[in-house]
Length: 115
Image (cartoon, rainbow, N blue to C red; front, side, top):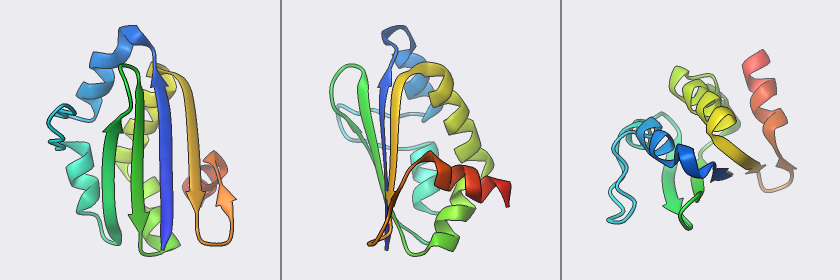
């Protein structure tokens, strides 16, 4: 199993845009839809959750059956859209991917997209 955690700090002026990017997220009631719902239904996805830490901090946590499944996710149009959005809307981002032996960061996504 591979786990991915994406922690972001959104610019305060961009919070609404971020929430719209992940489509229909009502974090106060833990109702998650839109991109997160699509990702939960991708092949090999065991779980995908979005948490609001405070006003501008969010955490996405996902678990994947295999590297192949996660790499396919990285190559998807929706994930590309999400990465573009966080690059534009975030003051800070931290991506960690753990496969039980190694912890990787954004380079894992870059490598998957390069192939």
